[in-house]
Amino acid sequence: MFGTLSDIYGRRAMVIAALSLFVMGSILCAVAPNMPVLILARGLQGLGGGGIMPIVQTVISDLISPRERGQYQAYFSGVWVAAGIGGPILGGVFAEHLHWSMIFWINVPLSLAALGLLLPKMGKIPTFHRRRKVDWLGGVLLMASAVVVMLVLTWGGNRYLWLSPTITAMMGASLALALAFVWHAGRAEEPFLPLSLIGGRVVPYAILAGSCALGAMVGLTVHLPLYYEVVYHLSASEAGLALIPLAAISTAGAAIAGRTMAHAKHYKRVAIVGDACAALAGMALALVALPLWALLVLLSIFSLGLGTTFPVTVVSIQNAVARWQVGTVTGAMNFFRALMSSFAVAAFSAILLMALGADISLGGEHRGPVNSIGGADMITAFSYVFGAAAVLLACATLCMILMEEKPLAGPATRVEMAE
Image (cartoon, rainbow, N blue to C red; front, side):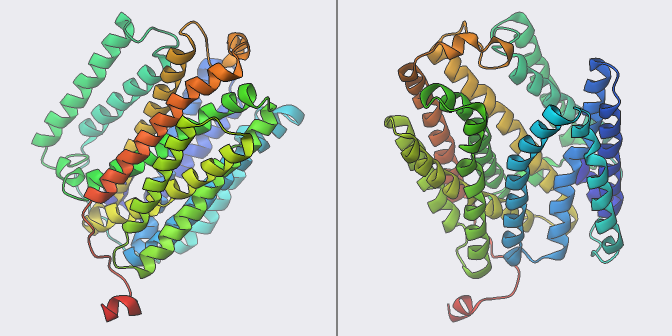
């Protein structure tokens, strides 16, 4: 929602609103007296936190030309990796040595520092937003549909059977809400998310490619610790460290793609090659049982190739729409990526449950039955998970091939001038 609102009310107002909601939610989480209050406060925190990324990505698009923007998207990947690695470590220190509420209190000084850095500079940002009527009904329909989908992916196969009446009814409700959104968007004078904006030969392919890449990465990140613990007998902390190649090396792939976009005319080729290599690495992981060092090498190749997708897709999407629609399309991109990540986690869990036995649980306090599974059985089960990740990257490769490669605005390089 914040991406669209930033196209209407401006980046400054919306980044203040997003960070303010995030701070308010964090404080309420820290002082929550019971679980219902904590859950509601987390919702408020998530509402604000979900707006930060698309707004900041849109601010970058306001300041940096498309040709140079890929390098800045690589910086985003670096921050994402640092947070993904450092956050759980810091959270563990807080939970073990301090108080659990510190996990939320730390957000307050960080958010205030971010506001202090941003606000004095925001006045220099070019103005591309355009005031128009806000289609609140369309936004609510889209968000409600997404919330029900998230609940289905969370509860399906866990709290309820996938074919239970509850899950079936929720799927039907989500579909009805989505169809209502499409019907409304087709008739509204100024829809919240114009359907034409996510059409064409660039945006849908770029969104799907980025969503598949992120889904594969998140899905493996969630489930690989179980594989490490059962197959290689690593401790929980060692399993966390073994995730670093998957998370960290994607930053190198993003940096390579960003620099390529700044100099090459056919900029999407780096993502095509990267995704194809990642798909091949995923297939190799699925077909061959490997020692730990070889597994980490293949995961590094997988992550390096996967990382090239993000700068190319983000910049291509933003380059394909009018300047006053960049916030909307950036928000839509993050929305669909989040949905695909949730779907990938649920799909990988379902694959493991089918391969290992539907009477086990993959997490929480009921991990006992999983710990009794032999390494050979876990290797067999994960071969399907790695295969699913390879399929997602193959889909990303195909989308990058089909995506139209529009010229990027920005300073021409000597190579292009020679061509």
